[in-house]
Amino acid sequence: MAAALLWFRRDLRLGDNPALRAALARCEHVFPVYIHAPEEEAPWEPGGASRWWLHHSLDALDRRLGEAGSRLIIRLGPSLPALRQLITDTGAIHVYWNRRYEPAVMRRDSHIKLALRAEGLVCESGNAALLFEPWAVKTGQGQPYKVFTPFWKACQTRLPAFVPEAGPDALPPLPNDLASVPLSALKLLPRIGWDEGFYRAWNAGEIAAQQRLQEFLAIIDDYATQRDRPDLPHTSRLSPHLHFGEISPRQIVHAVQIHLAHDASAGGIKGAEAYLRELGWREFGHHLLYHFPNTPEAPLNPRFADFPWRTDYGEVLHAWQRGRTGYPIVDAGMRELWHTGWMHNRVRMIAASLLTKNLRIPWQEGARWFWDTLVDADLANNTLGWQWVAGCGADAAPYFRIFNPRRQGERFDPQGSYVRRWAPELASLPDRYLQQPWDAPVSLLVDGGIKLGDGYPYPIVNFQTSRAEALAAYELIK
Image (cartoon, rainbow, N blue to C red; front, side, top):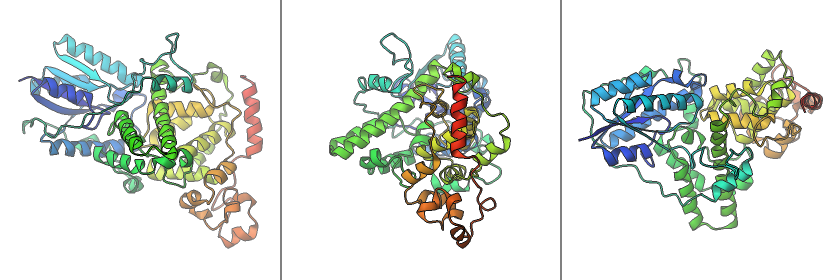
């Protein structure tokens, strides 16, 4: 009658869950637990938007467990004392969990595994978050990759036909007297209601993740050609579900393979290949974080440690955060982020380029803001994205690649529907001036009730001048 603790973390699902599968295979009693100990993730404790998602994801998991005849036991950290108390409360002699890859969490987990094994418990961890463990893919010389394309080619040669296991229909019941703190005790939801837009934009949980996957598969044929358009719904929006483990990359790959088996058209193949490549970037981010754990704070390219970043940027940074830069595509993105906890990837790159190149504000400031405001805030991928745009990371964009926000807006929001949605004060402008309202005739501005410098700001920086200054700064470390 062996008993096991199933320690949920960022694997908040029943389907394709290696730790759950192992626990059920070896033990008759399985106790699902979640331990809230955000301080153990310092300095990267979950931000406000992530906490919002976590609350609703845990609630959804508890309901899924209830449908299977079990429930989620919630305890407060620190984790090791909480696990020891749970072992005492349940009589468990096995502890199972799925691995996480943030440096602080890996150190904590290693300590816990050693401590519990020394006390005679069976402790095992599995891979529920990635296609490949970050240490499993190496160059021919046995070194980590720093360039994405050869990394992904190496992954593709090993990419099997994943057949993820479905979640169990029934789980062993739990004693009614086994104590659990209420979800509200974790205080994950904001006290001030800035999250109203989140409820309109998202549904958290395993069932919602599977529904979103099916919705995306219906449009995946257009993904390769339309994924850079923030005005169109042609991205997967699966990133928060992946981050919290409500769906696994194996499940996604398997579903895409099934889709291709029924749709082998040129568009279907290109769309699937383009999307799987994006999953590859996610894998690459975790590969880099594992091998270079200092990169959330320090540039991978050491030359950038001496880059002459701007120092007097407080008000400028605040304007960027609030979507008040005077560049409509950037402001639209920053407002979308604030109201929904998400931003289209193309717009993320444009906004990050403006911050790091034209405003010359350290990329770490942007990374911290995204960390607090994104529902899909993931340390590996947030770090990868910001260092890529800033030019200081692995396989980074050349520093001289500086996105022109006006041209980017004209190209990827050609009818201006994205800007008009998130910057409605500009909605009356014709397409010709929407991405550059400073060039609009005064009569158009007056007719539209637009007061530049008052209702909507002038550009916070001159693009051409700031571009030249950024390139000159780069020459100092080149």
